[in-house]
Length: 529
Image (cartoon, rainbow, N blue to C red; front, top):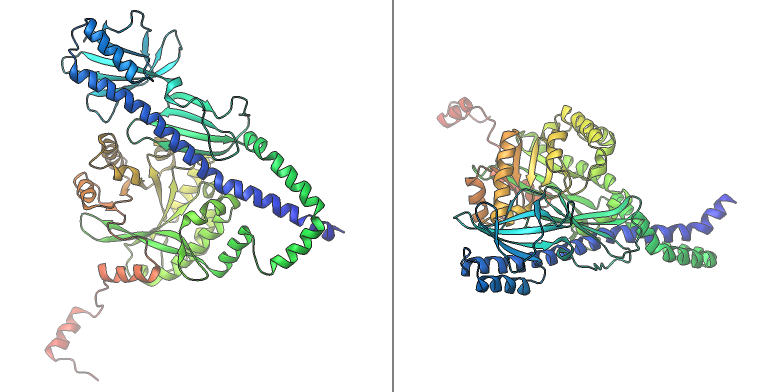
């Protein structure tokens, strides 16, 4: 009876699983697009305000408050419709000119931040009454101490209505990079916001010190897809018997996405590709980062974007990670055993640091192997929040006791920031490609690079630059004290045989015949048997 019931309801279970896998796999991608599009809109509004501010400052006499100057200030507000007020201030902080008689009191909430214009500072302020609305103040500072400032209110920084591709409603939150809250929007005023977050992403501006985070509450996700689940289950119950017969026939020829991943794991289709890590000061090979790929049945490989969202949502990422490590251990073993200085790094997800299972996995895979524990680096990313920092610190310490090094990946882009560096006790920090791309074009981002390099030196932490693609970037990084880097300027991720060939080319094993024997052979003292 129990078996019959299980068979009868198998289609319903499968339907619900597939629905949830689909929503999970695409949810993060969709809200990531929403976050980026809303951030671009906010940036464009600040750009309009910046253009009017700099244009006025460059063309007008900032010390003369006459009708012509007031008219020019008023025109700047009209041309930048998101600006609420613009004023001229003397060096003592007194307002000396404004297009309107009544102006609201402004109080700084954050320190002044740099912008892409060296003369313009970016500050979060309150205006109006105590604890009044917030605004972004852009202030053009003259060399004589005078300044022109304008305000962009929080309710004009973000669109009044935000729309995403997903059916579920979501919350968007604009903050400074230091965490100071600026503004928030709901995709629908009556949406449920209680409960935990089902999905969350964050997008960071490369022009202003702001971030935009988007979250979908679990209650909102369920409310949006409730009817889909209810109607799906109702239809599945009516057609359960037919579904059983159909499933038996289809199962002989096709697999669902979860089963397909399981089959691929059993076949060993998930393999590592290796992206070299180079010393840009000496040109020496330092090791590699192992990146997962999936072999296609007909040839070729799929990149991580084709399967990572699904395997993370279903928990299959853990088995894939173990399979990757075992494959790399066997493939790199002889070459790494002969070159103890080479390292290989593996990427872990946040949930790897919620139990001691990762510690036992490392012992099971690498104890007694030719790839030694002290040649392994495990990377934890900032982009996903760790479930429990205290628990993660204990797990990291046990991994470090084995000789394994821990790297903080995507530094400067995610949830952890300084707290991860201080609390996790990592050995290495890897700077995200976003900052490397800004070299030579974005003063704000290059200042962050210099700060991160100095921070790594002060904390005695190894520093690695990711995503290096040009020789100009190499020159900049080398000049600013960065030694280790990886990216397409050196090599893309390579299949095992090509990476082993690269090792032999860049780091050949010298002959083990003693020098005295080689001299004897050259001198004819030793004859062939």
